[in-house]
Amino acid sequence: MSPCRIAMIGVTFGFLAAVASAHAGPGAEPEARAGDGRELFVARCSSCHSLDYMDMHARFGTRALWEAEVAKMRNAYKAPLSDDEAKAIVEYLARAYGPASPAASVSR
Image (cartoon, rainbow, N blue to C red; front, side, top):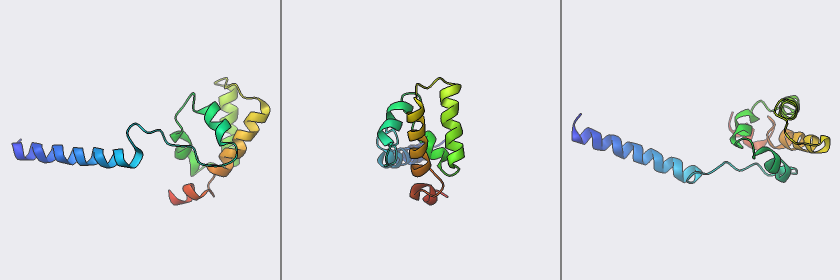
């Protein structure tokens, strides 16, 4: 491969890395969407997995999906959530990451 071509590939990768870094910030974790229950959700859920998990599912995030996901986290993975905390997190997820949420509508 010619030196010119190698340089062009390097410039291209550098540009793409700069764009990605500027968009998300270096090593940035996505932030949870605003709403009642956000603090509880972040405190309980982000200790085990990335918050981008919610964005991946927001398009399909019906209340039934979020109820099933929270139940799975409690039953299969033994997430330490009380019944009241689980209900509050489902409410938050259904509002903030449901198919009708503004961010989910934009990503369709």
